[in-house]
Length: 303
Ligand code: ADP
Ligand code: MG
Image 1 (cartoon, protein in one colour):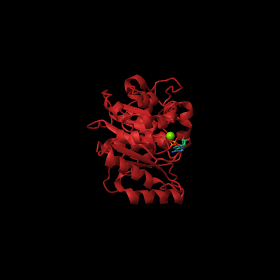
Image 2: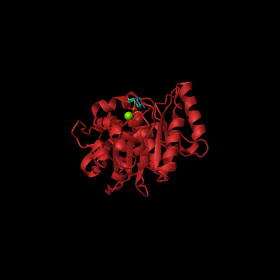
Image 3: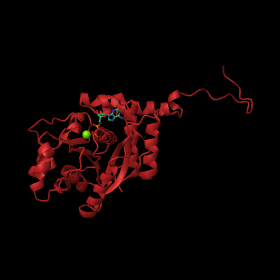
Image 4: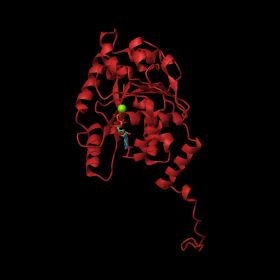
């Protein structure tokens, strides 16, 4: 029934389309529809190429998941992004659907043979603007082979610097260790992004990582800073996750993204289809939070 406004005497406004209302679910639905339709607004281009290393020597905290999904989200918004897979397990290459069997030009050739990124890079299918240098199992030997090579800590830096292609973001996915592969990534980057899993022991080992960052900063790369921390596998129903999040936020302050990535089955399913969750299920909570995290990172701009 059309009601009459008792104060002003005029008819109350007709109910609006639910998607026009400012409800979180409506804006999420709009975003999902936009992702599906490929009609996303552009994210701001950084003033200069941002090279970010995604590091945490703990395994299974969401480094690879974060690398590929942020990279996809940034590329979907019109930015040019390169993922460098620096983990011999090649999980980032798998998630991006990039061939990485033995014999494919990869980060091994880049680091050990001094090959250029141009010779190793592959376009990621279905995600224009996104490319990847894959990792093959050969990389497992690189940690040892690098020891006897000249400028062993700065070989990745050299490769990235001599790749003059127009790039907005370079995201480097690290192995779960602090060896020469991770050191190469720290030397090649200006920003460190640390994913922290909202679990017990989440902060254990973080001190060691931060000391390594400081050491590289002091001796090899004065421009290095921890710019971003992302809480992953956050389950808002558990007190533990909330406690970890609070502790991380009180310790690290502003560099912790407001967006925390929830635990999501869709996120963990995506790699088995050679996809990121951004393309596998763009409307899922996981995809929407990675999109939001990418937006925060892009908005923060280069530091
Ligand atoms: P890392 O690279 O640090 O070892 P991964 O990104 O490979 O960690 O994640 C470890 C495992 O957890 C993978 O099986 C991945 O699919 C899963 N995973 C990562 N993030 C989430 C999430 N938000 N929700 C559910 N599963 C996740
Ligand atoms: Mg990984």
